[in-house]
Length: 497
Image (tube, rainbow, N blue to C red):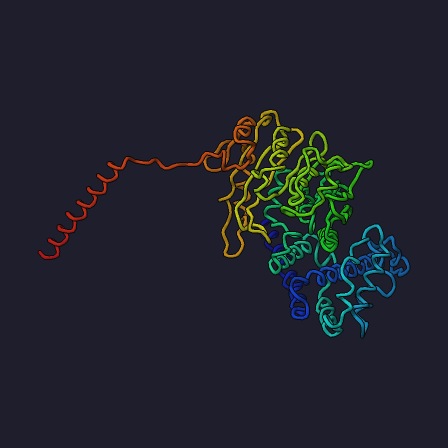
């Protein structure tokens, strides 16, 4: 029964995705595929808000016996929609539709400062109002297409709506691989990391480079949307459009109380507590790989004292992200998972010294390398680190090294982690044992002996075929050759008999 329900939900999400992607096809041509998300995302959000408002109105009318004044009270609605700003009212406009959409979305944002501030206005009004890109006729086609379906909660529950939007985000990533890594992490990798961190209802979760919000959403889903998740989900994202997408994505998935801030996390962290970096139970991120000009000068005298192990070169901010995340972990049960390029495991210069101090801190629980072609926009093979404030007693002074480079499912354009791949990687982590070809527990002294190189392939024991003596193999070959000649003679005698 459960399997049928899941399949039905996936089918529903795919069907909704197909409907949404038809909207992309309407603007294809005048709008490049790299910019689809700048149009479809805010419009989908606007339509969803309007349809949910209508549902709430209908429910209030039923409960009040048809009292329209009661049904229009702000208390009856999750979002306030000012007069003239409802989807249907904009739909009735006959000209300057782009300006009408932008104006309505801005008014809705102003009317809901606590929940929608900085969400809808982040999308370029110039794109919507430039008729050389999208004329009224194209926008009319877009509005009419989305008007074919109601997108309220009764029509599409939050999980289903969110899943359809995730599929759409993946499509955007497929179409613009160069920029995709900025806002989309493969969901299989996200599920694996969340499963390892095991966030519990009531715990806080933070992603300092949250992109489209996928890691935060997966954490909420892992906690079964428990009411204790409310107010415990935090993120920051530098790109203004992606920060808006993250808020919309969380909303479309049903999250009701979260805090996503826009800004440069390394230069200007926004989520603070008492003037210091806020602390969280679970910290999870896939930051931009090897970020250049990330702010090394400011970091060297960071007022939040995040340079606990030193200042990386301004040509690569990987270890700045790692140090920021370590500083964001709470004491006691604080833990983190961070995706990084494998270069952090062995690169020299400043990184070598930082890595040495990180190893000696004995915070690293596991290092896991992944296969290639799993991530959009980079040919680099990634890895991830699991770091804990307090490791289990028998993990102390040790690090679990996992070589997962061969655990993947190969596809023509993009390799993926299927469910069995995720299960295999998780079991390697959970088992915490030596397994030939895949994992090995190493002591800090072994790592010191290898000059603090953290590459699992330097430690994992790989199976080697026994090399047999040349004379023995040659004798077998000669015997086989003689057997073939003898059998050929016997076969020839049988044919000619």
